[in-house]
Amino acid sequence: MWTRKELKAKGKAAFKANFWRCVLVALIIGLIGGAAGGAAGGAARRNVTINNAPQLVQDETTVTQEFLDGAITMNVNGEPQDVESFMNEFNNLLNDIRSEEGGEKIVKAIAVALAGILLTLFAVGFVISILVINPLKVGCNRFFAENSAAPAELGEIGYGFKSGYGRVVGTMLRADIYLILWSMLFIIPGIIKGYSYRMVPYILAEEPELSGKDAITRSRQMMNGNKWKTFVLDLSWILWLFFGVITLGIGMVFHVAPYMEATNAELYHALKRGEA
Image (tube, rainbow, N blue to C red; front, side, top):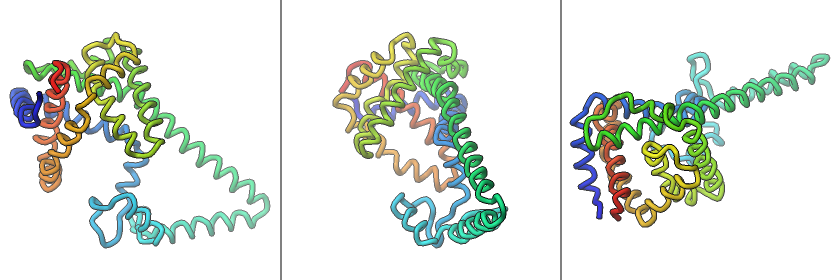
């Protein structure tokens, strides 16, 4: 039976035995995780500030309410501007264009162009996520899985591109689609299935020849009876994450993130051995 204390002890030892490489690979995981979240969302987070409240503690409900109340500011050419005022100015501009001869067609053309740009950005991001980020994630997970037994080489992060690339891409895409569909049923089912599919990248990192169905099924079997314990393991990092925040990310990069990734790899090995 695995315990959080045991996994963290093994993870810390493996991480410290290969410190700089673990730091680098954990940083890559953090970067590709942010990329998968979407550049547009990242831009919004950087350019939106909730008035009179720390941004980090705002939940989605509060953010939505603040937006409806017109209490969010955004940076426009480096200057803070109220979102509501910005939208009013934009609408006034469109109305001025409409008032001119042929203006309605121009407005429609602008709308089509903006929609096309957004769809193109989404499509490009989606393709990059499928073809680059997911295989890279498999390689990074393989690095930490291999690093559990002995210091791993950085070349392991390219494993997803060299071994069964097409199957890795297809299986990760399949898991992502399943997760999206489950999430559409409300948040909780999506979270539960996220834990069910958690071991898929590790499984592919060792057996890329497995079919998508088999890899996902094996992950579900491994996580059966372990989802709650894994959730509690994730919660146990809260103070470490707070440490990463108060050190302005330095503690996160050089200790917390690689420590967490190494511990997750130990969890995979424990579940692979059949420990519950």
